[in-house]
Image (cartoon, rainbow, N blue to C red; front, top):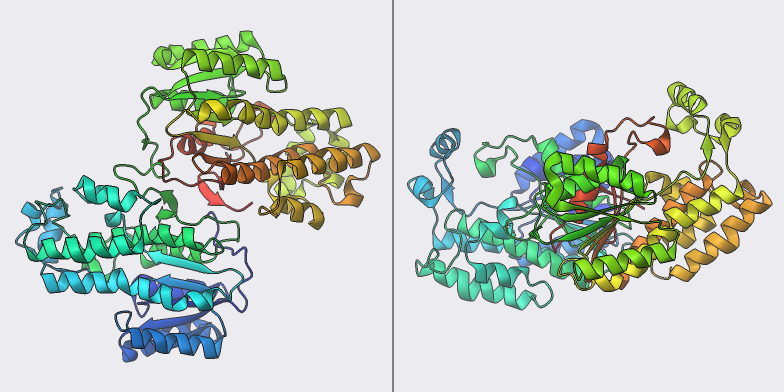
Amino acid sequence: MAEATPAVPTKNRYAVVTGSNKGIGFEICRQLACNGVLVVLTARDEKKGLEAVEKLKGCGLSDYVFFHQLDVVDPSSIASLVDFIKTKFGRLDILVNNAGIAGHIMDWEVFQSVMAKGGALTHDNLAGAMTQTYEMAEECLQTNYYGAKRMIEAFIPLLKLSVSPRIVNVSSGLGQLQEIPGEWVRTVLNDVESLTEERIDELINDEFLQDFKAGLLKTKGWPVVFSAYKMSKATMNAYTRILAKKNPGFLINCVCPGYVKTEINGNTGHRSVEEGAECPVKLALLPDDGPTGLFFSMGEVSSFCPFCSAMAEATPAVPNKNRYAVVTGSNKGIGFEICRQLACNGVLVVLTARDEKKGLEALEKLKGCGLSDHVLFHQLDVVEPSSIACLVDFIKTKFGRLDILVNNAGIGGLIMDWEVFRSTMAKGGPQALTHENLGGAMTQTYDMAEECLQTNYYGAKRMIEAFIPVLKLSGSPRIVNVSSTGGLLQNIPGEWVRAVLNDVESLTEEKIDELINDEFLRDFKAGSLETRGWPVVLSAYTMSKAAMNAYTRILAKKNPGFLINCVCPGYVKTDINENTGHRSVEEGAECPVKLALLPDDGPTGLFFSMGEVSSF
Protein backbone atom coordinates (compact mmCIF):
# COMPACT_ATOMS: atom_id res chain seq x y z
CA MET A 1 0.00 0.00 0.00
CA ALA A 2 3.04 2.25 0.02
CA GLU A 3 3.21 2.75 -3.76
CA ALA A 4 0.63 2.64 -6.57
CA THR A 5 3.14 0.86 -8.82
CA PRO A 6 1.44 -2.45 -9.62
CA ALA A 7 3.12 -5.77 -8.83
CA VAL A 8 1.02 -7.54 -11.49
CA PRO A 9 1.72 -6.12 -14.99
CA THR A 10 -1.28 -3.96 -15.94
CA LYS A 11 -0.92 -4.31 -19.69
CA ASN A 12 -4.00 -6.15 -21.00
CA ARG A 13 -5.70 -6.06 -17.63
CA TYR A 14 -9.42 -5.27 -17.69
CA ALA A 15 -11.45 -3.43 -15.06
CA VAL A 16 -15.06 -2.45 -14.46
CA VAL A 17 -15.87 0.45 -12.13
CA THR A 18 -19.51 0.98 -11.16
CA GLY A 19 -20.98 4.46 -10.64
CA SER A 20 -18.02 6.06 -12.34
CA ASN A 21 -19.23 9.00 -14.39
CA LYS A 22 -18.26 11.42 -11.60
CA GLY A 23 -16.61 11.77 -8.20
CA ILE A 24 -14.48 9.00 -6.74
CA GLY A 25 -15.57 6.46 -9.35
CA PHE A 26 -14.47 8.71 -12.22
CA GLU A 27 -11.11 9.31 -10.54
CA ILE A 28 -10.62 5.55 -9.94
CA CYS A 29 -11.11 5.05 -13.69
CA ARG A 30 -8.59 7.79 -14.47
CA GLN A 31 -5.94 6.44 -12.10
CA LEU A 32 -6.38 2.84 -13.29
CA ALA A 33 -6.15 3.95 -16.93
CA CYS A 34 -3.00 5.96 -16.11
CA ASN A 35 -1.58 2.67 -14.78
CA GLY A 36 -2.20 0.99 -18.13
CA VAL A 37 -5.41 -0.85 -17.17
CA LEU A 38 -8.19 -0.97 -19.75
CA VAL A 39 -11.21 0.40 -17.86
CA VAL A 40 -14.91 0.16 -18.54
CA LEU A 41 -16.53 3.27 -17.05
CA THR A 42 -20.19 2.72 -16.20
CA ALA A 43 -23.19 4.92 -15.37
CA ARG A 44 -26.97 4.63 -15.22
CA ASP A 45 -27.34 7.73 -17.43
CA GLU A 46 -25.81 6.99 -20.84
CA LYS A 47 -25.39 10.66 -21.76
CA LYS A 48 -23.47 11.44 -18.55
CA GLY A 49 -21.38 8.30 -18.96
CA LEU A 50 -20.35 9.18 -22.51
CA GLU A 51 -19.48 12.73 -21.43
CA ALA A 52 -17.27 11.29 -18.67
CA VAL A 53 -15.46 9.02 -21.17
CA GLU A 54 -14.82 12.01 -23.43
CA LYS A 55 -13.21 13.81 -20.48
CA LEU A 56 -10.85 10.88 -19.94
CA LYS A 57 -10.07 10.70 -23.64
CA GLY A 58 -9.22 14.40 -23.42
CA CYS A 59 -6.58 13.44 -20.84
CA GLY A 60 -4.84 11.27 -23.44
CA LEU A 61 -6.43 8.02 -22.23
CA SER A 62 -8.38 7.11 -25.41
CA ASP A 63 -6.75 3.67 -25.63
CA TYR A 64 -7.68 2.78 -22.06
CA VAL A 65 -11.34 3.71 -21.54
CA PHE A 66 -14.66 2.36 -22.75
CA PHE A 67 -18.21 3.15 -21.66
CA HIS A 68 -21.09 0.79 -20.99
CA GLN A 69 -24.45 1.67 -19.50
CA LEU A 70 -25.13 0.02 -16.13
CA ASP A 71 -27.80 0.12 -13.46
CA VAL A 72 -26.70 -2.13 -10.58
CA VAL A 73 -30.32 -2.44 -9.39
CA ASP A 74 -31.38 -3.98 -12.71
CA PRO A 75 -30.26 -7.62 -13.30
CA SER A 76 -30.80 -7.31 -17.09
CA SER A 77 -28.49 -4.29 -17.20
CA ILE A 78 -25.80 -6.25 -15.35
CA ALA A 79 -26.29 -9.23 -17.69
CA SER A 80 -25.79 -6.92 -20.69
CA LEU A 81 -22.49 -5.68 -19.26
CA VAL A 82 -21.33 -9.26 -18.53
CA ASP A 83 -22.01 -10.20 -22.17
CA PHE A 84 -20.09 -7.13 -23.35
CA ILE A 85 -17.04 -7.97 -21.20
CA LYS A 86 -17.15 -11.65 -22.20
CA THR A 87 -17.31 -10.81 -25.92
CA LYS A 88 -14.84 -7.93 -25.85
CA PHE A 89 -12.16 -9.23 -23.45
CA GLY A 90 -12.95 -12.83 -22.53
CA ARG A 91 -12.35 -12.21 -18.82
CA LEU A 92 -12.35 -9.56 -16.08
CA ASP A 93 -9.38 -8.80 -13.80
CA ILE A 94 -10.67 -6.01 -11.57
CA LEU A 95 -14.16 -5.18 -10.29
CA VAL A 96 -14.58 -1.98 -8.29
CA ASN A 97 -18.03 -1.64 -6.71
CA ASN A 98 -18.33 2.10 -6.21
CA ALA A 99 -21.97 2.85 -7.08
CA GLY A 100 -23.86 4.15 -4.07
CA ILE A 101 -26.59 6.48 -2.85
CA ALA A 102 -27.18 8.15 0.51
CA GLY A 103 -30.61 6.77 1.39
CA HIS A 104 -31.86 10.09 2.77
CA ILE A 105 -32.41 13.74 1.88
CA MET A 106 -30.28 16.17 3.87
CA ASP A 107 -30.44 19.94 4.37
CA TRP A 108 -26.68 20.39 3.93
CA GLU A 109 -26.67 23.94 5.29
CA VAL A 110 -28.02 22.70 8.62
CA PHE A 111 -25.56 19.80 8.48
CA GLN A 112 -22.60 22.15 7.92
CA SER A 113 -23.82 24.43 10.68
CA VAL A 114 -23.95 21.49 13.14
CA MET A 115 -20.48 20.39 12.03
CA ALA A 116 -19.06 23.94 12.30
CA LYS A 117 -20.35 24.29 15.86
CA GLY A 118 -18.73 20.99 16.83
CA GLY A 119 -22.08 19.38 17.46
CA ALA A 120 -22.58 15.63 17.24
CA LEU A 121 -24.39 14.26 14.19
CA THR A 122 -27.19 12.89 16.35
CA HIS A 123 -30.86 12.40 15.57
CA ASP A 124 -31.72 15.35 17.85
CA ASN A 125 -29.30 17.71 16.09
CA LEU A 126 -30.22 16.62 12.57
CA ALA A 127 -33.90 15.69 12.98
CA GLY A 128 -35.23 18.74 11.15
CA ALA A 129 -32.58 18.55 8.44
CA MET A 130 -32.77 14.87 7.49
CA THR A 131 -35.56 12.97 5.76
CA GLN A 132 -35.41 9.15 5.80
CA THR A 133 -38.33 7.15 4.40
CA TYR A 134 -38.84 3.41 4.08
CA GLU A 135 -38.70 3.69 0.26
CA MET A 136 -35.37 5.57 0.46
CA ALA A 137 -33.98 2.94 2.84
CA GLU A 138 -35.03 0.10 0.56
CA GLU A 139 -33.53 1.81 -2.50
CA CYS A 140 -30.29 2.50 -0.63
CA LEU A 141 -29.86 -1.15 0.38
CA GLN A 142 -30.80 -2.36 -3.11
CA THR A 143 -28.13 -0.08 -4.62
CA ASN A 144 -25.27 -0.08 -2.12
CA TYR A 145 -25.36 -3.66 -0.85
CA TYR A 146 -27.45 -5.75 -3.24
CA GLY A 147 -26.12 -3.84 -6.27
CA ALA A 148 -22.55 -4.78 -5.33
CA LYS A 149 -23.66 -8.34 -4.53
CA ARG A 150 -25.40 -8.74 -7.90
CA MET A 151 -22.31 -7.44 -9.71
CA ILE A 152 -20.01 -9.85 -7.87
CA GLU A 153 -22.26 -12.88 -8.42
CA ALA A 154 -22.60 -12.06 -12.11
CA PHE A 155 -18.87 -11.43 -12.66
CA ILE A 156 -17.34 -14.21 -10.53
CA PRO A 157 -17.16 -16.61 -13.52
CA LEU A 158 -15.29 -14.02 -15.64
CA LEU A 159 -13.04 -13.03 -12.73
CA LYS A 160 -12.11 -16.70 -12.27
CA LEU A 161 -10.60 -16.59 -15.77
CA SER A 162 -8.11 -13.95 -14.57
CA VAL A 163 -4.74 -14.92 -13.11
CA SER A 164 -5.00 -12.02 -10.65
CA PRO A 165 -8.66 -11.33 -9.81
CA ARG A 166 -9.36 -8.34 -7.59
CA ILE A 167 -12.62 -7.08 -6.08
CA VAL A 168 -12.66 -3.71 -4.35
CA ASN A 169 -15.83 -2.71 -2.49
CA VAL A 170 -15.93 1.02 -1.82
CA SER A 171 -17.39 1.27 1.66
CA SER A 172 -17.38 3.83 4.48
CA GLY A 173 -16.23 4.33 8.05
CA LEU A 174 -19.96 4.68 8.78
CA GLY A 175 -20.23 0.96 8.06
CA GLN A 176 -17.91 0.03 10.92
CA LEU A 177 -19.78 -1.82 13.63
CA GLN A 178 -19.17 0.86 16.24
CA GLU A 179 -21.80 2.90 14.33
CA ILE A 180 -24.52 0.37 15.20
CA PRO A 181 -25.91 0.78 18.75
CA GLY A 182 -27.37 -2.72 19.11
CA GLU A 183 -24.88 -5.23 20.45
CA TRP A 184 -26.93 -8.07 19.00
CA VAL A 185 -26.63 -6.61 15.48
CA ARG A 186 -22.86 -6.11 15.89
CA THR A 187 -22.51 -9.68 17.12
CA VAL A 188 -24.33 -11.10 14.08
CA LEU A 189 -22.24 -9.11 11.58
CA ASN A 190 -18.92 -9.71 13.35
CA ASP A 191 -19.33 -13.48 13.70
CA VAL A 192 -17.37 -14.11 10.52
CA GLU A 193 -16.96 -17.84 11.23
CA SER A 194 -20.68 -18.61 11.09
CA LEU A 195 -22.06 -15.59 9.18
CA THR A 196 -23.69 -16.41 5.83
CA GLU A 197 -25.18 -14.41 2.98
CA GLU A 198 -28.58 -15.81 3.95
CA ARG A 199 -28.20 -14.48 7.50
CA ILE A 200 -27.33 -11.03 6.13
CA ASP A 201 -30.49 -11.17 3.96
CA GLU A 202 -32.58 -12.03 7.03
CA LEU A 203 -30.98 -9.21 9.02
CA ILE A 204 -31.73 -6.65 6.31
CA ASN A 205 -35.14 -7.71 5.05
CA ASP A 206 -36.80 -9.51 7.97
CA GLU A 207 -35.40 -7.33 10.73
CA PHE A 208 -33.93 -3.93 9.79
CA LEU A 209 -36.46 -2.97 7.11
CA GLN A 210 -39.36 -4.33 9.16
CA ASP A 211 -38.25 -2.32 12.18
CA PHE A 212 -37.74 0.75 9.97
CA LYS A 213 -41.35 0.44 8.72
CA ALA A 214 -42.62 -0.05 12.28
CA GLY A 215 -40.68 2.97 13.64
CA LEU A 216 -38.60 0.74 15.94
CA LEU A 217 -35.08 1.66 14.84
CA LYS A 218 -33.97 3.14 18.14
CA THR A 219 -35.78 0.56 20.28
CA LYS A 220 -34.21 -2.38 18.41
CA GLY A 221 -30.66 -0.96 18.39
CA TRP A 222 -30.39 0.12 14.74
CA PRO A 223 -28.62 3.36 13.74
CA VAL A 224 -31.09 6.25 13.63
CA VAL A 225 -28.93 8.73 11.68
CA PHE A 226 -27.95 7.71 8.11
CA SER A 227 -29.74 4.47 9.01
CA ALA A 228 -29.95 2.67 5.67
CA TYR A 229 -26.57 3.98 4.48
CA LYS A 230 -24.82 2.66 7.59
CA MET A 231 -26.54 -0.73 7.31
CA SER A 232 -25.76 -0.98 3.58
CA LYS A 233 -22.06 -0.41 4.25
CA ALA A 234 -21.95 -2.63 7.36
CA THR A 235 -23.45 -5.49 5.36
CA MET A 236 -21.09 -4.82 2.43
CA ASN A 237 -18.16 -5.10 4.85
CA ALA A 238 -19.50 -8.37 6.27
CA TYR A 239 -20.13 -9.74 2.78
CA THR A 240 -16.55 -8.86 1.78
CA ARG A 241 -15.23 -11.08 4.58
CA ILE A 242 -17.51 -13.97 3.56
CA LEU A 243 -16.46 -13.62 -0.09
CA ALA A 244 -12.74 -13.54 0.73
CA LYS A 245 -13.09 -16.83 2.64
CA LYS A 246 -15.06 -18.46 -0.17
CA ASN A 247 -12.64 -17.32 -2.90
CA PRO A 248 -9.06 -17.88 -1.71
CA GLY A 249 -7.66 -17.30 -5.23
CA PHE A 250 -9.06 -13.74 -5.25
CA LEU A 251 -7.97 -10.62 -3.37
CA ILE A 252 -11.20 -9.04 -2.09
CA ASN A 253 -11.16 -6.01 0.19
CA CYS A 254 -13.37 -3.10 1.20
CA VAL A 255 -12.19 0.47 1.63
CA CYS A 256 -13.30 3.77 3.10
CA PRO A 257 -11.89 6.53 0.87
CA GLY A 258 -12.29 9.10 3.65
CA TYR A 259 -14.61 12.09 3.82
CA VAL A 260 -14.27 13.11 0.18
CA LYS A 261 -15.89 16.19 -1.34
CA THR A 262 -18.60 14.67 -3.57
CA GLU A 263 -22.28 15.11 -4.37
CA ILE A 264 -23.35 12.34 -1.96
CA ASN A 265 -22.36 14.55 1.00
CA GLY A 266 -23.33 17.90 -0.52
CA ASN A 267 -19.62 18.58 -1.19
CA THR A 268 -19.02 19.01 2.55
CA GLY A 269 -16.03 16.63 2.53
CA HIS A 270 -12.46 17.78 3.11
CA ARG A 271 -10.54 15.25 0.97
CA SER A 272 -10.10 15.54 -2.80
CA VAL A 273 -11.36 12.85 -5.19
CA GLU A 274 -7.72 12.20 -6.12
CA GLU A 275 -6.95 11.36 -2.48
CA GLY A 276 -10.15 9.33 -2.13
CA ALA A 277 -9.42 7.19 -5.20
CA GLU A 278 -5.83 6.44 -4.23
CA CYS A 279 -6.46 3.50 -1.86
CA PRO A 280 -9.14 1.77 -4.00
CA VAL A 281 -6.71 1.89 -6.94
CA LYS A 282 -3.87 0.46 -4.84
CA LEU A 283 -6.15 -2.38 -3.74
CA ALA A 284 -7.12 -3.02 -7.37
CA LEU A 285 -3.41 -3.28 -8.26
CA LEU A 286 -2.32 -5.37 -5.27
CA PRO A 287 0.44 -7.93 -5.82
CA ASP A 288 -0.57 -11.58 -5.72
CA ASP A 289 0.64 -11.93 -2.12
CA GLY A 290 -1.42 -8.95 -1.00
CA PRO A 291 -4.07 -8.94 1.73
CA THR A 292 -7.64 -10.13 1.36
CA GLY A 293 -10.82 -9.89 3.43
CA LEU A 294 -9.74 -6.64 5.11
CA PHE A 295 -11.16 -3.17 5.65
CA PHE A 296 -8.95 -0.23 4.70
CA SER A 297 -9.49 3.34 5.78
CA MET A 298 -7.65 6.03 3.84
CA GLY A 299 -4.81 3.70 2.93
CA GLU A 300 -4.36 1.89 6.24
CA VAL A 301 -5.66 -1.44 7.47
CA SER A 302 -8.50 -0.73 9.87
CA SER A 303 -11.00 -2.78 11.87
CA PHE A 304 -14.50 -4.11 11.22
CA CYS A 305 -14.90 -4.40 15.00
CA PRO A 306 -16.63 -1.99 17.37
CA PHE A 307 -14.68 0.75 19.04
CA CYS A 308 -11.32 0.11 17.43
CA SER A 309 -9.11 0.90 14.48
CA ALA A 310 -5.81 -0.42 15.63
CA MET A 311 -3.79 0.12 12.48
CA ALA A 312 -5.00 3.70 12.24
CA GLU A 313 -4.50 4.47 15.90
CA ALA A 314 -2.35 2.89 18.57
CA THR A 315 -5.46 2.58 20.76
CA PRO A 316 -5.79 -1.17 21.30
CA ALA A 317 -8.84 -3.17 20.26
CA VAL A 318 -8.18 -5.81 22.88
CA PRO A 319 -8.01 -4.38 26.43
CA ASN A 320 -4.34 -4.24 27.44
CA LYS A 321 -4.80 -4.59 31.16
CA ASN A 322 -3.26 -7.92 32.15
CA ARG A 323 -1.80 -8.50 28.68
CA TYR A 324 1.73 -9.88 28.70
CA ALA A 325 4.44 -9.33 26.09
CA VAL A 326 8.01 -10.47 25.47
CA VAL A 327 10.31 -8.39 23.25
CA THR A 328 13.64 -9.90 22.23
CA GLY A 329 16.79 -7.80 21.86
CA SER A 330 15.19 -4.91 23.70
CA ASN A 331 17.82 -3.24 25.85
CA LYS A 332 18.36 -0.55 23.19
CA GLY A 333 17.19 0.83 19.85
CA ILE A 334 13.89 -0.23 18.30
CA GLY A 335 13.39 -3.08 20.78
CA PHE A 336 13.69 -0.74 23.76
CA GLU A 337 11.23 1.69 22.19
CA ILE A 338 8.76 -1.13 21.43
CA CYS A 339 8.86 -2.02 25.15
CA ARG A 340 8.28 1.62 26.10
CA GLN A 341 5.32 2.08 23.74
CA LEU A 342 3.70 -1.22 24.74
CA ALA A 343 4.11 -0.36 28.43
CA CYS A 344 2.60 3.08 27.78
CA ASN A 345 -0.40 1.23 26.33
CA GLY A 346 -0.83 -0.69 29.60
CA VAL A 347 0.81 -3.96 28.49
CA LEU A 348 3.06 -5.71 31.01
CA VAL A 349 6.32 -6.13 29.07
CA VAL A 350 9.28 -8.42 29.67
CA LEU A 351 12.35 -6.64 28.31
CA THR A 352 15.11 -9.09 27.36
CA ALA A 353 18.82 -8.88 26.57
CA ARG A 354 21.82 -11.22 26.33
CA ASP A 355 23.82 -8.95 28.64
CA GLU A 356 22.13 -8.88 32.04
CA LYS A 357 23.84 -5.65 33.13
CA LYS A 358 22.68 -3.78 30.00
CA GLY A 359 19.20 -5.23 30.33
CA LEU A 360 18.83 -4.07 33.93
CA GLU A 361 20.10 -0.59 32.99
CA ALA A 362 17.47 -0.42 30.24
CA LEU A 363 14.81 -1.52 32.73
CA GLU A 364 15.79 1.31 35.08
CA LYS A 365 15.43 3.81 32.24
CA LEU A 366 11.85 2.65 31.65
CA LYS A 367 11.08 2.76 35.35
CA GLY A 368 12.41 6.33 35.32
CA CYS A 369 9.67 7.09 32.75
CA GLY A 370 7.02 6.12 35.31
CA LEU A 371 6.53 2.62 33.89
CA SER A 372 7.61 0.60 36.96
CA ASP A 373 4.33 -1.32 37.09
CA HIS A 374 4.57 -2.38 33.44
CA VAL A 375 8.14 -3.61 32.89
CA LEU A 376 10.20 -6.60 34.00
CA PHE A 377 13.58 -7.90 32.86
CA HIS A 378 14.73 -11.41 32.01
CA GLN A 379 18.03 -12.45 30.48
CA LEU A 380 17.72 -14.07 27.04
CA ASP A 381 20.04 -15.31 24.32
CA VAL A 382 17.91 -16.41 21.35
CA VAL A 383 20.76 -18.60 20.05
CA GLU A 384 20.75 -20.65 23.26
CA PRO A 385 17.83 -23.12 23.69
CA SER A 386 18.39 -23.38 27.47
CA SER A 387 18.13 -19.59 27.81
CA ILE A 388 14.82 -19.62 25.91
CA ALA A 389 13.53 -22.52 28.05
CA CYS A 390 14.37 -20.54 31.17
CA LEU A 391 12.33 -17.56 29.92
CA VAL A 392 9.39 -19.82 29.00
CA ASP A 393 9.38 -21.22 32.56
CA PHE A 394 9.48 -17.68 33.97
CA ILE A 395 6.50 -16.53 31.83
CA LYS A 396 4.53 -19.68 32.58
CA THR A 397 5.10 -19.38 36.33
CA LYS A 398 4.66 -15.59 36.54
CA PHE A 399 1.70 -15.03 34.17
CA GLY A 400 0.37 -18.41 33.03
CA ARG A 401 0.28 -17.33 29.39
CA LEU A 402 1.79 -14.96 26.81
CA ASP A 403 -0.23 -12.59 24.62
CA ILE A 404 2.40 -10.86 22.50
CA LEU A 405 5.77 -12.04 21.19
CA VAL A 406 7.92 -9.50 19.33
CA ASN A 407 11.00 -11.03 17.68
CA ASN A 408 13.32 -8.06 17.36
CA ALA A 409 16.78 -9.50 18.17
CA GLY A 410 19.11 -9.27 15.18
CA ILE A 411 22.67 -8.72 14.00
CA GLY A 412 24.21 -7.44 10.76
CA GLY A 413 26.23 -10.50 9.77
CA LEU A 414 29.18 -8.44 8.56
CA ILE A 415 31.74 -5.82 9.46
CA MET A 416 31.30 -2.56 7.55
CA ASP A 417 33.54 0.46 7.09
CA TRP A 418 30.74 2.91 7.77
CA GLU A 419 32.65 5.91 6.46
CA VAL A 420 32.82 4.30 3.02
CA PHE A 421 29.16 3.29 3.38
CA ARG A 422 28.11 6.88 4.19
CA SER A 423 30.17 8.24 1.32
CA THR A 424 28.64 5.73 -1.12
CA MET A 425 25.10 6.54 0.08
CA ALA A 426 25.76 10.28 -0.23
CA LYS A 427 26.96 9.91 -3.80
CA GLY A 428 24.40 7.48 -5.19
CA GLY A 429 21.73 6.53 -2.66
CA PRO A 430 20.70 2.94 -1.80
CA GLN A 431 21.03 1.76 -5.42
CA ALA A 432 24.77 2.46 -5.21
CA LEU A 433 25.25 -0.14 -2.44
CA THR A 434 26.71 -2.72 -4.82
CA HIS A 435 29.47 -5.27 -4.29
CA GLU A 436 31.73 -3.22 -6.56
CA ASN A 437 31.25 -0.05 -4.48
CA LEU A 438 31.35 -1.74 -1.06
CA GLY A 439 33.60 -4.74 -1.68
CA GLY A 440 36.62 -3.25 0.07
CA ALA A 441 34.56 -1.78 2.90
CA MET A 442 32.60 -4.90 3.77
CA THR A 443 33.82 -8.06 5.47
CA GLN A 444 31.53 -11.10 5.30
CA THR A 445 32.86 -14.43 6.55
CA TYR A 446 31.23 -17.84 6.73
CA ASP A 447 31.25 -17.71 10.54
CA MET A 448 29.54 -14.29 10.50
CA ALA A 449 26.92 -15.58 8.04
CA GLU A 450 26.20 -18.63 10.18
CA GLU A 451 25.87 -16.50 13.34
CA CYS A 452 23.57 -14.04 11.54
CA LEU A 453 21.21 -16.80 10.40
CA GLN A 454 21.28 -18.47 13.80
CA THR A 455 20.31 -15.17 15.46
CA ASN A 456 17.96 -13.46 13.00
CA TYR A 457 16.08 -16.44 11.59
CA TYR A 458 16.63 -19.46 13.82
CA GLY A 459 16.55 -17.30 16.97
CA ALA A 460 13.05 -16.07 16.08
CA LYS A 461 12.03 -19.61 15.05
CA ARG A 462 13.23 -21.08 18.37
CA MET A 463 11.34 -18.39 20.30
CA ILE A 464 8.13 -19.03 18.39
CA GLU A 465 8.32 -22.81 18.72
CA ALA A 466 9.00 -22.53 22.46
CA PHE A 467 6.25 -19.98 23.10
CA ILE A 468 3.45 -21.31 20.83
CA PRO A 469 1.96 -23.44 23.69
CA VAL A 470 1.96 -20.43 26.04
CA LEU A 471 0.57 -18.12 23.35
CA LYS A 472 -2.26 -20.60 22.69
CA LEU A 473 -3.48 -19.87 26.23
CA SER A 474 -4.10 -16.23 25.24
CA GLY A 475 -7.46 -15.00 23.99
CA SER A 476 -5.66 -12.78 21.45
CA PRO A 477 -2.20 -14.14 20.54
CA ARG A 478 0.05 -11.89 18.44
CA ILE A 479 3.49 -12.56 16.93
CA VAL A 480 5.39 -9.68 15.36
CA ASN A 481 8.59 -10.52 13.48
CA VAL A 482 10.74 -7.42 13.00
CA SER A 483 12.13 -7.86 9.50
CA SER A 484 13.52 -5.61 6.78
CA THR A 485 12.87 -4.63 3.17
CA GLY A 486 16.36 -6.05 2.72
CA GLY A 487 14.58 -9.42 2.95
CA LEU A 488 12.17 -8.71 0.08
CA LEU A 489 12.56 -11.25 -2.71
CA GLN A 490 13.49 -8.56 -5.22
CA ASN A 491 16.84 -8.34 -3.41
CA ILE A 492 17.71 -11.94 -4.28
CA PRO A 493 19.13 -12.20 -7.83
CA GLY A 494 18.43 -15.90 -8.35
CA GLU A 495 14.99 -16.56 -9.79
CA TRP A 496 15.10 -20.15 -8.48
CA VAL A 497 15.62 -18.90 -4.89
CA ARG A 498 12.78 -16.40 -5.22
CA ALA A 499 10.52 -19.12 -6.63
CA VAL A 500 11.19 -21.41 -3.64
CA LEU A 501 10.53 -18.71 -1.03
CA ASN A 502 7.47 -17.30 -2.78
CA ASP A 503 5.69 -20.63 -3.32
CA VAL A 504 3.68 -20.20 -0.15
CA GLU A 505 1.29 -23.04 -1.02
CA SER A 506 3.98 -25.74 -0.95
CA LEU A 507 6.72 -24.04 1.10
CA THR A 508 7.62 -25.78 4.37
CA GLU A 509 9.97 -25.08 7.25
CA GLU A 510 12.04 -28.07 6.08
CA LYS A 511 12.46 -26.49 2.62
CA ILE A 512 13.66 -23.25 4.22
CA ASP A 513 16.17 -25.25 6.29
CA GLU A 514 17.45 -27.01 3.16
CA LEU A 515 17.71 -23.70 1.31
CA ILE A 516 19.71 -22.06 4.10
CA ASN A 517 21.92 -24.90 5.28
CA ASP A 518 22.35 -27.20 2.28
CA GLU A 519 22.53 -24.50 -0.37
CA PHE A 520 23.14 -20.91 0.77
CA LEU A 521 25.73 -21.64 3.46
CA ARG A 522 27.38 -24.29 1.31
CA ASP A 523 27.64 -21.86 -1.61
CA PHE A 524 28.88 -19.14 0.76
CA LYS A 525 31.70 -21.45 1.89
CA ALA A 526 32.51 -22.38 -1.71
CA GLY A 527 32.59 -18.72 -2.84
CA SER A 528 29.71 -19.35 -5.26
CA LEU A 529 27.23 -16.70 -4.06
CA GLU A 530 27.13 -14.64 -7.26
CA THR A 531 27.25 -17.66 -9.58
CA ARG A 532 24.34 -19.32 -7.82
CA GLY A 533 22.13 -16.21 -7.64
CA TRP A 534 22.46 -15.36 -3.94
CA PRO A 535 22.74 -11.73 -2.73
CA VAL A 536 26.40 -10.66 -2.55
CA VAL A 537 25.89 -7.48 -0.48
CA LEU A 538 24.55 -8.00 3.07
CA SER A 539 24.27 -11.64 2.01
CA ALA A 540 23.44 -13.42 5.28
CA TYR A 541 21.33 -10.53 6.59
CA THR A 542 19.23 -10.51 3.40
CA MET A 543 18.72 -14.28 3.50
CA SER A 544 17.91 -14.26 7.24
CA LYS A 545 15.13 -11.72 6.70
CA ALA A 546 13.84 -13.38 3.52
CA ALA A 547 13.63 -16.68 5.44
CA MET A 548 11.87 -14.93 8.34
CA ASN A 549 9.31 -13.42 5.95
CA ALA A 550 8.63 -16.81 4.35
CA TYR A 551 8.35 -18.48 7.77
CA THR A 552 5.85 -15.80 8.88
CA ARG A 553 3.56 -16.78 6.00
CA ILE A 554 3.83 -20.51 6.83
CA LEU A 555 3.12 -19.81 10.52
CA ALA A 556 0.07 -17.67 9.79
CA LYS A 557 -1.44 -20.49 7.71
CA LYS A 558 -0.70 -23.09 10.40
CA ASN A 559 -2.10 -20.96 13.25
CA PRO A 560 -5.39 -19.38 12.12
CA GLY A 561 -6.25 -18.31 15.68
CA PHE A 562 -3.14 -16.11 15.84
CA LEU A 563 -2.31 -12.81 14.14
CA ILE A 564 1.26 -13.20 12.86
CA ASN A 565 2.92 -10.54 10.72
CA CYS A 566 6.36 -9.28 9.81
CA VAL A 567 7.35 -5.64 9.58
CA CYS A 568 10.13 -3.43 8.29
CA PRO A 569 10.44 -0.47 10.67
CA GLY A 570 12.25 1.58 8.02
CA TYR A 571 15.84 2.76 7.94
CA VAL A 572 16.08 3.63 11.63
CA LYS A 573 19.10 5.24 13.28
CA THR A 574 20.46 2.37 15.45
CA ASP A 575 23.71 0.59 16.30
CA ILE A 576 23.17 -2.10 13.65
CA ASN A 577 23.69 0.52 10.90
CA GLU A 578 26.12 2.68 12.87
CA ASN A 579 23.39 5.35 13.24
CA THR A 580 23.33 6.04 9.48
CA GLY A 581 19.52 5.72 9.43
CA HIS A 582 17.17 8.66 8.94
CA ARG A 583 14.14 7.53 11.00
CA SER A 584 13.88 7.82 14.78
CA VAL A 585 13.43 4.77 17.02
CA GLU A 586 10.02 6.20 17.98
CA GLU A 587 8.95 6.11 14.32
CA GLY A 588 10.50 2.68 13.83
CA ALA A 589 8.68 1.14 16.80
CA GLU A 590 5.27 2.53 15.86
CA CYS A 591 4.19 -0.15 13.36
CA PRO A 592 5.48 -3.18 15.35
CA VAL A 593 3.48 -1.87 18.33
CA LYS A 594 0.33 -1.41 16.23
CA LEU A 595 0.69 -4.97 14.94
CA ALA A 596 1.10 -6.21 18.52
CA LEU A 597 -2.15 -4.43 19.46
CA LEU A 598 -4.19 -5.45 16.40
CA PRO A 599 -7.92 -6.11 16.88
CA ASP A 600 -9.04 -9.72 16.58
CA ASP A 601 -10.20 -9.21 12.99
CA GLY A 602 -6.85 -7.73 11.99
CA PRO A 603 -4.60 -9.00 9.21
CA THR A 604 -2.28 -11.99 9.44
CA GLY A 605 0.52 -13.41 7.30
CA LEU A 606 1.40 -10.03 5.82
CA PHE A 607 4.50 -7.88 5.40
CA PHE A 608 4.28 -4.26 6.55
CA SER A 609 6.74 -1.55 5.62
CA MET A 610 6.69 1.60 7.76
CA GLY A 611 3.03 1.13 8.67
CA GLU A 612 1.64 0.11 5.29
CA VAL A 613 0.88 -3.31 3.82
CA SER A 614 3.62 -4.15 1.35
CA SER A 615 4.57 -7.11 -0.83
CA PHE A 616 6.92 -9.99 -0.11
